[in-house]
Amino acid sequence: MYFFLLNLSILDLGLISITVPKAMDSSLTGIREISYAGCAAQVLLFAFFIPAEYFLLTIMAYDRYVAICRPLHYGTLLGSRACAHMAAAAWACGFLHALLHTANTFSLPLCQGNAMHQFFCEIPQILKLSCSTAYLRELWLIVVSVCVFFVCFVFIVVSYVQIFRAVLRMPSQQGRHKAFATCLPHLAVLSLFLSTGFFAYLKSPSISSPPLDLVVSVLYSVVPPAMNPLIYGLRNQELKAALSKLLSGCFQKQ
Image 1 (tube, one colour):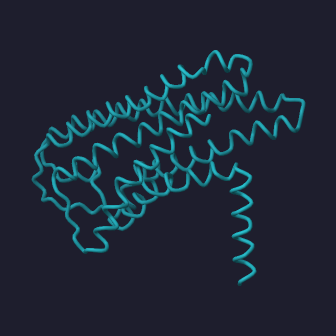
Image 2 (tube, rainbow, N blue to C red):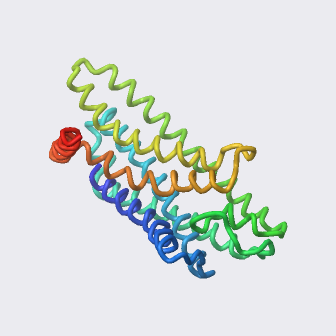
């Protein structure tokens, strides 16, 4: 679990480093421009970190399934080599996803200007600037990506159905509490990641507007990687004690 958390932390750090520093620089300097190469780099890295993190969260669901439902086989099914291979597969799939989408997106002619109502370069916003029918190739790639993500989602749901069935059959209340405690941080991170992403890309066009799109983009690109360390860190007793002490001190001052 901690090996996968290390990979998740690296992905979160990379994801938040793509958009926030540039957005802060634009706010401080008032220069709201980005070079063509810089925009392509943002698209490539963003399209890499988002699916890589989703694939890693899927693998972590399998990790929890094996740990709870098949604990005696954990060392065999999830040894150090198997964990390394699965993590490498998540990174490789994310890179392949990013390469395909970036190459296809930036091969399109942009004839609707060069201004995007967004604080970072995002594929849907770039597609709005294209007037070529070739953008349908990118739409097909997006459909394939959505299908892959849906398969991962089904795998996660099935894994947790098996986990909850196994936990509810445990005779010991302490055992059930311990099992739920190991799953809740992953479920919280996964729910935050999926809910913000689904709302960003599946919201009705009738409620879409530049200010709302900007807020939603912040929700799914900045909030999850910023909250993940806190969600998993709350399992650490020393961190919980320090946070409790900090909050109690704030309330006493008020």
